[in-house]
Length: 467
Image 1 (cartoon, rainbow, N blue to C red):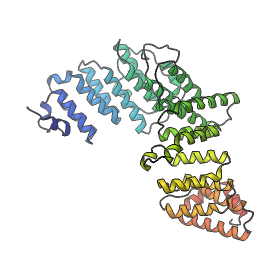
Image 2 (tube, helix red, strand yellow):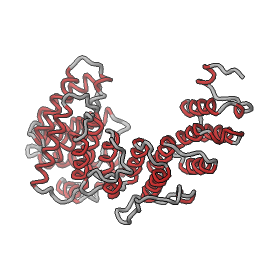
Image 3 (cartoon, helix red, strand yellow):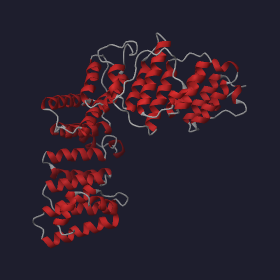
Image 4 (spheres, rainbow, N blue to C red):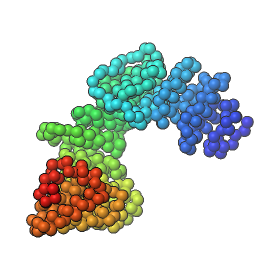
């Protein structure tokens, strides 16, 4: 049967004749069906129907194509059934096979609502000579189960497939540990001292190190763990890119967000030095907006204010000042960028410079006042001593953002500004506060109800004579 190239690339096979095409043709059809929006289950079913025909059950590309589709879509149980069907047909799983199954676990963990992993409870990461886990092992109840399943799968594959290329499967294994939050297992799976050579590829690539650093997020000492992999990475001849730098910044941000006690002075110095070195590495690179935002957030949290403002001036402002289109510029800055920069400028006592900068961005790029931006600019107005600006900002926000609601922090900033305005007569202040109170009661009563449980807001309402 003659099949045109266009038909093969753009359309699905007729249901009655598809089962008679050769396995390679069916593989291409299934991949294109999946890419062009067809149901992943339908594409997998096409392959499974062809597997039942004669010698096709011994062709690994059919199984691998089906597993690829399952891996991209998190179809975990389908992956398990296909894997066991493959082993039952005496087809040896290869690198692509195990990578796809591990990817299916990682995607399933991300899409499902499994319980978070606990840092307690050991997982045996030794060799598994019992073969691949049974179907019941794929019925995951927690993220910890996902990490355990991934490790057992990888161990079984290494045990039964000596002298194999391990780079892609190992990267997929690290992705499962990252998604499942099993940071405590990283040292045994991927030690930085060069041990565990049976599992770790001979030459880990940048994806290996990046994924390992991302997996450090759930570690209480995330920065120290990330630095260990960063040092190991620097010993290789691989050039750093924004991906691995972003991974370290995310690990630092995660640690700083959940840290309750102050950082010891010695460790704070180390973290600030690390941030400065990362800033130097980012200078010649094209930095995407997400990386910029995380860098600025970490700089603000570590009080590296001058470094953060220097990054803004050297990496982002030149792009905004150039003649590039607004669309391209927004790849390098967004609302979050401005929030972090404005917070840094407030701490540097440059709050008065925020308003002309925002007005320029609004006129050139169409930036609108979001809730986060409004709250930061209200704080900037207070710090700059501009008592009339907060009300004007709020009025502009209300007019331009009908679908965006202010939050509890907005109410607090507005009331605090009125209470601190010594030049405002008491009755006029009470009248302004009542207008704001009534606006919140009408437009967003849930926010006002929740805000009244806050002792600071309750105190301000009482002080202004509204309670």
